[in-house]
Amino acid sequence: MADETHSPEAPRACAPCHAGVLALRRALDAERRAFEASKDQVVHDLSAVRRRIKLNIGGTRYETSAATLTRYENSYFGVLLSGRFELERDEEDGSIFLDRNGAIFGTVLEFLRTGVARMPDTASEALALLTELRCAPKAVCVCVRVNLGSLIG
Image 1: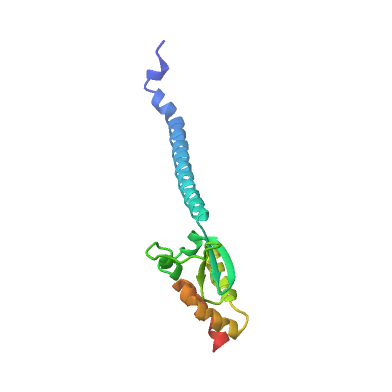
Image 2: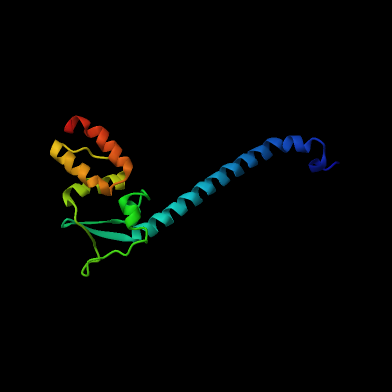
């Protein structure tokens, strides 16, 4: 009796199984690559979160991550926290003081955290926000200016 694994019919009979194994292997490889990318992102995020930044904006205290503040490299904070400048920090809590409008800065910080710009309710709030946008990325400036056109005429 002939060995079936060496018969001319064996490769054709195993072809569907072989194709299934290859498809499963490709799927597992893709899943592994996605997992590795996610793992790398989590490691990056954890290291950034561990680097917390305390801010004193016009007397209002904020605490956030360096990753949030530097989300846009060429923004005010991206440059400020790039390591190219020596920052003066408060001796008690290590915060960075900026002489800006603390209440309005919350809107800028929320944009940096979420990518969503909350529009002010009044024209005076809109003008105050536009003043503070020198600390924000250009993307939010454009978004806010377009959306504030009806408020500030």
